[in-house]
Length: 517
Image (cartoon, rainbow, N blue to C red; front, side):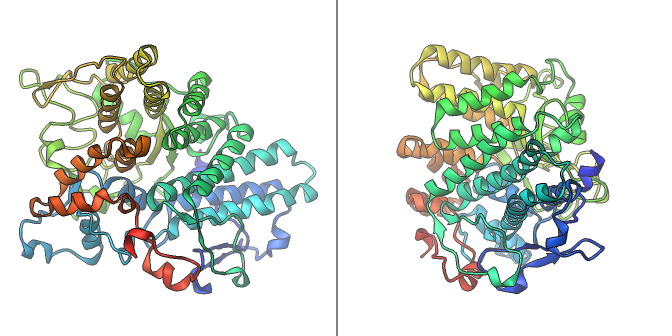
């Protein structure tokens, strides 16, 4: 995977742009030999380099790395993360720099259009690289007769996959967004572009990922490369996530079954020591449990050292997690632990988030960012089984068995916060759904999934479970602000971010999202 960890970026005159911005917002990237775009799309090797450029963009971003955006978008509006600094008084808050102030405002549901973390620039940069491959990749066949249609489609599948994934993040975070499917590769193309409806964006995501599932590679020949690039089964995993979000449960089940039947992924066996679990899944990465990861390495460090590292920590685990109320503790046998908990996800002693920084320093901070793991497939299928035919006991039992496989592998404790973790009645849809939701919290803590899990479960069946979201956000709010937060989140339009103010200024085709007008 070394070639792809570096993700050699040789994309010719690929203009990385943010929608509707002035020309100073795009960047002209040329190979060292100075070829023009028309000269560049000649060989399959150049096409391969362009696809690697799409992956390379995942490791960077803009002013803020993409991985940091994805953590913030998926975690800060939930209940598992708090500021790294204690903010007991106004004097404490005065110590915050502008970036940390924006982070705290997001945690406190005070996100405005000026908050730097609602800037979608990093995501659209990746989308534009994918658009460029999709548009110009087919030209290579006319020049390189060794490039077959099957191989071309496989390359295009990777670009479609990444584009679909990026739009899925935008859909869940902003709701309606501009849907740009053509590349911007010179300044004459910069133009105003309006938002599309959530349904239109959703349909494009499905189209992209379906093409990828049908045309993607089964394998690139080794496990590391299969975890760093989109395969056919990575695409099916993302499709399952998308279908689950849209309440298309049978389609989600079918997509999960494709991944499960591939036999390419598995859980580590029950009894795996915690150190081995952490080392395989998180420290080394690219394990049998993992499906897709951003491939940081010693040549391209991740942004996690200042976020979670010792000294300058921006985020910590919420008190309720550090106090043992997520994974549980055994007061009699301290060796009886959930291998995902203390020492793997966070430190109970310090509340530090250690998942990405255990055994690392600022100069060795190249833990991967984990987009999908096999346990996600099992829990997505369990959730879909629960809702595809509510009250169906057979489906419910299958869902319970899937959760049980994960709990057994993780040595999950049966008593948490003084309460027994009871297996629900398989015909009780609501209780079973909550059981899966709570297991997802344990399995994916600090992996950028919590807010999306909360919102997906709350909005199901036209916000039938709105109370789940309101209870979580109010419990996380400052005591004096709880009712204000509840009133805000009762307006469902507030569940999506505002459009960044700079985008509104430079793209006259955009209209601010309704809640923030």
